[in-house]
Amino acid sequence: MTGRLQGKVALVIGAARGIGRGIAERFAEEGARLVLGDMDSEAARTTARDLDAAFVATDISKMADAEAAAALAVQRHGRLDIVVQNAGIYPWQLIEDTSPDDWDRVMAVNLRGAFNAARAALPVMKTQHSGRMLFTSSITGPHVTSPGHGHYSATKAGINGFIRAAALEFAGYGITVNGVEPGNILTEAIQEHRGPAFIKNMEDAIPLGRLGSPRDVANAFLFLASDDAAYITGTTIVVDGGQLLPEGADFRLNPP
Image (cartoon, rainbow, N blue to C red; front, side):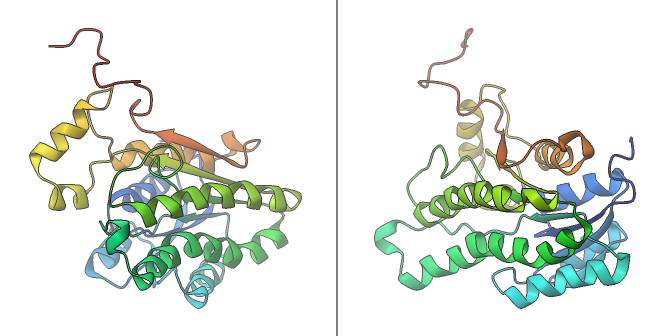
């Protein structure tokens, strides 16, 4: 490893499992001092112990929790260089079956969560005149979607709009704001809740022929968090194995 985040303090929200844990692991490998925020669970505490990170129970839909997480980073390490808002929920619900309360809950975690994380980190980053704000978006919403993901798609498209607005507003403070749009990533949740046929169908739709790994996504976050991305703001990186590229289903040059 190259120490690309040596001396940096990173708050990763939604770090217990999957993509979030992959981001935290990758940041730790590159020297970051970590504070992890997530719902209070055995998985979250295990990840914190494994990475020698501080843990704070965080419901990112609540501003007070976001502020407490940022405050812990400053209390422990004296600064906050990077905030990653990765926490999100994605219940499968057709629009006709989605109640207003269902809609509001997905909006609160996914979209208000982005706002809460940014607002909580902003005061200390303004004082430092530096910082990286990073958000997990998705190809679902900004580019594609499927039945049952109306509320999720709306939140992820909204996150991309928020990234652009925040990048413009915070540029004068030396803060960059960016995101990553994962495609289909082979997380524990996918393995637990989707069968082999579903996973094979997804793999067949991806030019690189496999689902992504949390580390694939984490490497994009690492780049955006590092000094290598100092002149990049207001944008997102798509990490999807080429899934968005084909015009139709028969896209392979040498199909079996």
